[in-house]
Length: 172
Image (cartoon, rainbow, N blue to C red; front, side):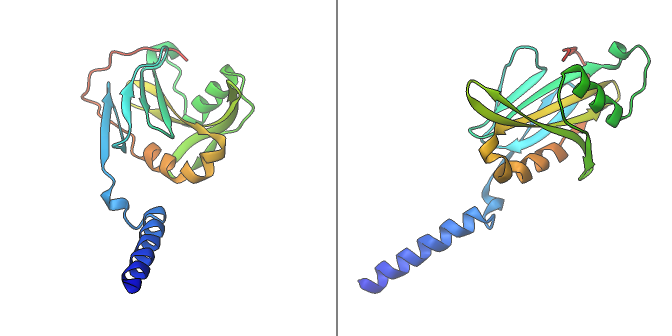
């Protein structure tokens, strides 16, 4: 009986450490969401939601994802690089941050307090065949270091289908 209790305790410890270290990541399911020509793959805990002034939004217990699609026609023929577009978004919104280009992504990070809670925003920018896209990943600041790898994974999952019809025109 005592051996069974010890074995059960050891198995519980191994299971806890295995799941927190990513050993069983293959068990978590992913879900792909599509809005206009944009697709993003998130974990299955995300649900599509609606947030005013955003093209699409997805929510989970730890991370919120908000997207904005800006049609090229809003830029009157000006062809911006992703770095230039990110700089424009930063300056237009009065942020004090800088553009980062790494992991195949162009993004910036800023922190903001909302209702006495500090949030980190990882904001990646993209360019489809017909629009610029802003995709924001928001989480509580204290959880950011723990969630950063998942956020980067989600940001890298974004793809664009040039054959999809685009109908959204939401300004930042």
